[in-house]
Image (cartoon, rainbow, N blue to C red; front, side):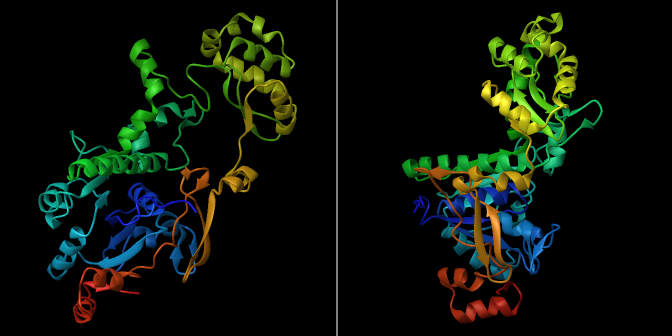
Length: 400
């Protein structure tokens, strides 16, 4: 069994949607007690969104909230103030991804929480960061892919700018926040004082553009739409075959480039003035791509991968989601975890992307029903049964 290094630590989870939920789900896998505070009657908006459902549960919500407990409590109500204060007093972390400034009127912003509970480590995820002229703007993965420059280097002249198909900025910002929270926890162990950790979709996007940015800083040249190709190496990208697509990295060295051409039966290409060195190949990338595809489309992906592998040229098939999760590699990694929900039944989700001593982490439980743990959490906070009943009867809290 993998150890649960955060066992005994409580996280007050104020998150919704993808980025914040990704952060707290990872902390749940590490053993933290994640108390997801949801406002009744609907709770997290993702409970009612998405295209797929299992029973009465949204698969979108299930995939992002495994391992958590649900406390359905309207923290905006005056009658919830005592419960909220007790919850904060028992928490080691608070994590939120609301629009900057929106929690202040409820006393759940960093300054108010830190003033009253100085040991809490507080995590915030936003679209544009917590300072600067855009700090107050809300942000979604699609919007930040556009505004960060990520879409400006994805796609082709024919397609125009294209977003990355998966919500990579949401996931990346969430992972960065989790990393920062763990670092702040180590600091708190030394000082006893909590820290405000913040990450944003924009900052993660900018860091992912680091190597492209470095070249632009020096050359002053904007990369432009690259499709699947690289601005600094060629051939390095995707190419059509008779039955699909492959990617190959035939530009790691001139020897690799020559071997790549030999596999394709085109030993003349290294002598072509347009392709004599990497810089020339990058300048004539479109011509090189056309020359490669004119050859590659005559045979299957499997045929070319066999030859390229034998020659030591890095290459791979472009796999779809079903193929990759059905692969032996994904199985051995334990990349898919099956959990059992009381109303949705069994469902599969992607396991946490971390391993200890070669063993994968897993979520300790299925995603919660709305208010599934309301009574348990309030009781843990010291509320008597009649006090819990009062909160339930007035609708400030709900339990399932």
